[in-house]
Length: 316
Image (cartoon, rainbow, N blue to C red):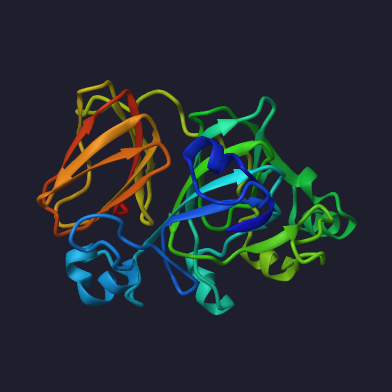
């Protein structure tokens, strides 16, 4: 996906195939959207789209965790922010339908970051709705956002309703609900790829913003206590759960999905072998795999020291 704020690091870091002169901001890796659909690359279903599989085999793909519209419930991306993204918000579930949008809760995992890079997320203490409105009008609204310095391995949870922006110099893995509804508050007076200012949605954003969301923090780096070594709990939310898995070469990784549900795997660094359902394939950094609900058991084996993100069904 070309973006005015994008760069070339997805090609440099993960071997994504695109011309060097195109500003690529996003690679949609697992997608079931009207305007972007993933295609299976291996096994007996190679060449089939995720849309085709969801239409033909909904229970086998997602069990009971599908969406009412029949689409796959999640969207997985890799983003390269050469410049700051727009200051934005996504509508919460309670308001999205009335706003003709979709709720979008997401998680950011930092794969690479230049020194001094930062997230903008949530409001600074004491910022009021009136101040936000005034500063949106005079172009200083970035001063309302909390700034969070980041480095590789840092993680931020971004629930619907949290104002946020990805800062320049950062490459992230983004795991999210299947949604593409974004309300821009401010775009740094930047022109889009067509040479025109990109549209803002301040009125909609003011409806969607959680004005009680002050000073969010990054997810702690320490491994969460639990029975499974090498597993770091990142997100436990009704929208989805996410874990970081890590292991040395030759070691197994334990998947954490409940029986009869799907999962997504995203390799941040290193490589591993995924085996299940009579198939086996190797994944390297920047590659993703969808494990369908009907695949009852898989084996994950690190072929080098590896870091993997795992996305599973939500939990209240």
